[in-house]
Length: 460
Image (cartoon, rainbow, N blue to C red; front, top):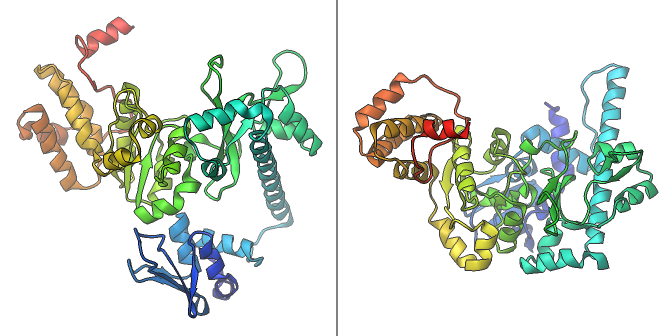
């Protein structure tokens, strides 16, 4: 913890109006400043900032505090992190832990190396952004226009274009004194399979910039622009800055709206995030080519109470939504689901049916576990063996719920959906020990021929 006098110095020197203005549009009103509250669905300017008292207060929802609590609430960070960010922003030297000269030198070197890595990634981001305006990028601009993505959203998400060249980015980095080893360590280039040298990791692709929670570029996701490419998406490899299971695409752009609505919409693809953001749904995020993880749920938990899953309407999308439930529930978040038509994803649904229909679908989202129970029960063939097996598959999901009353209610719903005596389900769950809940769910979404054991044998 920092000394009280240092905290007081940060509070006095940090311009609370300037800090809050990065998130809220403020207008002068006498000695105060007013704006729309970022912490609730505010239509009138209920949010007041008093710079003389280093204080803010919302007369709508009652939230109040100083510059530290504002950053904590809006960014989902703790007090120490908020203090460090403000101290860095306003050039305030914070006391450091006692360490010997070797430890201090190591810490300084690590800090310098990280700044260097972020600088190179920023350089690559600017390169891709500039290439999107080039003559060669017409195919990328056409793809954006076809999906009706506005220029503002392209800028908000720092989208770009990787030219159809083996070394254009590599040469650009070399001209700016970036070594091949540095570019290689950040996943920007790859070694040639035959012979010496390197080539660009991304070529002829629409580029999505992956950022950390502060908006710093840390990785990239490249979308294929022609059918000849083997992979629709190519993502940066994991590096010191980027671990895919610990990052959510769009989190930086969604953080303010999520804090306001206390809800996050979880989708599958990068285009889903950008398209929905462009249509006014600004609390949308997506995992990055991986199943939803505990670490990603933790990022949401800092800002929201509710997660609405809106994955693709195909079988894989529904199964992914099922697998996300124990992670959502395990973090104490309420889980909901919007089930899309079979051949739709959020991006295509938005283009085919419009934002009003999508908004209506979101407002009518069903409980995620409710939907899982209904679909699992509807897939049974009615035999005692099949019912028993499917109820057992629901056990880890129900067990992931933290509230005992909620668990009991879902046990009753399970019994009702399968048309069996609730006492049987209660008895079964009581007899079972607490199990690991994050395992593959093979519960049928639609009826399949034969029994599961038979299908598994045939598969082998």
